[in-house]
Structures are given as structure tokens and as C-alpha cells.
Image 1 (cartoon, rainbow, N blue to C red):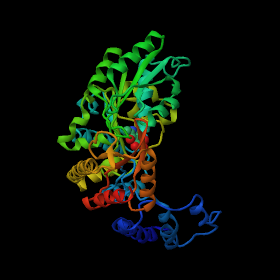
Image 2 (cartoon, rainbow, N blue to C red):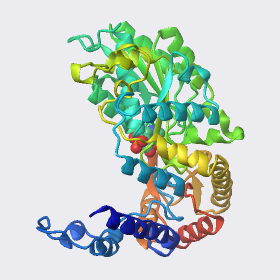
Image 3 (cartoon, helix red, strand yellow):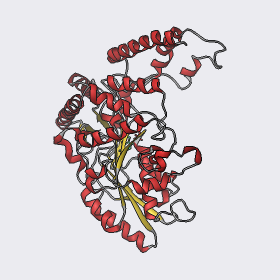
Image 4 (spheres, rainbow, N blue to C red):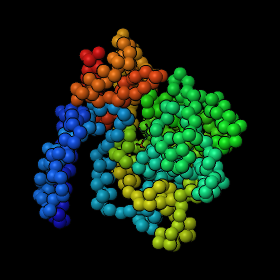
Length: 466
Ligand code: PLP
């Protein structure tokens, strides 16, 4: 493909994306393909010669799109949202066009400096504590996912707990971490990757709202110290995946301060609600956290991947992750005058993610995201009332923000059958989870184009299938 053809096909592709998004509502939310069906429609071996790009686009329509779950569909109520906006899509395209790798400040100063500024802008928009601001000892970085952010938090915590010896052999063996059974699986995965291991993760008891009990945390820490172990890391969740439970971060932070434990707050989806001043309670206690992450790619329309990761003191993070081979040395880095984000993450290379944040904040401003969040929260409040009014259903957890968890009163079999039938209909998509040992159906309202009529239709569907 040459530059002229790129111009022509690029316009065609942008048109294709706009039409896809415009007409998405008419498609089933999820795919009905059988395993292997997509691959079977494509040649087993790579092409020997170039093909017209029109043919590639035609196959996108014919083979790929029918094999997709449409995350941007207004009737997507599954998992947590992963919504995108037009400026963010253009930011992604611009990043691909520029093709830079911002691993060091020197490999693209603007990539690093825009990223630092975007983290500071987002800190203001989310009203996060000043100690996470890049102008002090802390700072922010854009990671791909919350899972990567959590892993980095664990590595920094381990560095601090071992007094700078985390990368020496034999220093991690007695370290113990704490979270709850409601926390995201990425906490345990991070501990596995860091070599701490699942056996050294304690699942602290939760209360009847699925939130961590600080007294149980304190007791677990005391028991581990008594056994000669070294408690080092606590992951609190602001908005759990199953039920959007909020761990009591202020009380957990008190335990962490007394016990000198690193406190990481995972606010993957719910943290974005703080764009709206009335929802800033989601960040209660975060001012005492050592690290924090939230995902604009979940609820802000900045398309995947985009996770904001902040630390209050970057020293431990850099000490844990910085290795300086000669080929990466630069004068600016040696002088300590710049941020080299390679030291803030696991990979060396990095995508220019800040562009899509910048494009979105400038081209849309923060108001559309605020309006969307408010609309979702209002709709979820209505759904919770509908559930309460229908004798066939009961709430499986206290509703919070944009998530309602319900179950069928006839028991797990009926709830599971309802999730399966609703999802098979293609008219909406939900996720099943387990709360209190019983099945539950989650309705998470997070689509950029989701309106009241979509939520009403989804509710009617659930009623009809019950
Ligand atoms: N933490 C929470 C609370 C989540 O709900 C999720 C995903 O839904 C994650 C972490 C993992 O997010 P990511 O895909 O960005 O790693």
C-alpha cells in the first residue's frame, strides 16, 4: 500500500467505523459462531501476493464482525463497560500514524511530557490527592490495564518492604499480601507473577455488603506477624467487579499506616465516577494510599487500553523496575532531568496512549463523560427499583452507581437459566457471578449510547424469560 492508497483506504475505513457504530444497535450484541468457525472461513496459509484492500474490508464485514461481541452496543450490560468515543478513536489512529515508541523521554520527549501532563489533568478532574501529582515525589503513568498497574504496585511494595533488596535472592519468601475474595483476580495474578505466590495471599473476611472488614485485616496481619511472616501489601477495591462493593479505605489505611503496609487502591471502573463531584465519595481515603489505579477505558470513552496508575512516592517503583543497560543511557536521563517511563512499567516499549486522552479531553471536554455517568447511575437506580417491585426477583447486593445485581427467587437454577436465555437471545448481554455462594445476574449500565429505551427493553426481556 502506498501513501495515495493509504489516504483513500483510510477515509474508507473511517467511514466504515462510523457506519459500524451508527448501525450497531441493529446487530445482536454477541456472536453466535461456533468454536473454529471464524478460522474455517479464512485461508489456512498467508497470501502469496497482495490483495485489494477492498477485499480485506469485505472480509471484515463477512467473517470478522459476525464473530464479535459488540462492546459498543447500547444493550451491552456485561462485565464492566469498555466504551470508546470518536476523539479517542482518532487519537489511537494518530498514535499509530506517528508510530513512536515513548520508552524514554529522549525517544520522543512529547510522548512522555504529554503523558505526564495528562496524568496531572486527570488527577484534577478526578479530584485525586496532590501527592500523586508528578511535580512532587509521586506521579502518574498510563499503563495498558489495571492488572499491569497492580503488578507494578506489588513490585514497588516488595521493594519497600525489603528495604531495596527485592531483587536479591531470598528476600521475598516470607512476604504476605491481603485483599478480599471479592477483589479482582488480577491481584492474585500479580502476586503470582511477582513470585510472592497465591499461598501468601490472605483473603480477608467481608461484611454483608461484600466490603473488607478492617478488624479482620488487622487480625490477619497480627496472626501472620505472630507466625514470623512479613505482611507487606494490601489491595483495597473501590468498586469490586462482582457487585461494586467499596472497601472502607479510610479504616484500611489506618491499619496499613500502623502496620507499615503498602496500600494499593484498585478503582478500575468506579474511580472514573469521580469526574462528577457528587460521586467523589468513591475516593474516600485514597489520600492515604501508596498507589491507585483507574481505567478511563472502562467508563470514560477513552478506548482500550488506558489505565491511570499513580504512586505517592515513585522511589520504590523506580528502584524495583529500573535497569540501565548502556544502550538505553541518555544525557537527560543521566542528569535526572526527565521521566523515563520504561522504569514505571514492566515492558520497555510503550504506546503513545496519552494522545487519545488529550484528544478526548480537548475535542469533547469532560462534560459528555459526566453526563453519560449521571445517565447510567440514574438508569441503574431505576432498574434497582424495578427489581424491588417484581416478586420474581431480589437484589443480590446493594445497588451501587451503575451496577445492579439480581437473582431469581426460585434459586440458582432459575438465575443461571435466565442469564443463559437472555444472552442467547442476542438482544442484550449480561454477566453471571456468584455472591454469597449463590448465582446472580449483573446489569452494568455503561455504554456511551445506552439510553433509557435500551435498559427498558433489557428489563422486559428478563421479565419475559422469567
Ligand atoms: N480491577 C477491577 C475491580 C476490575 O473490575 C477489573 C476488570 O474488570 C480489573 C481490575 C482488571 O482490569 P484490566 O482489564 O484493566 O486489567
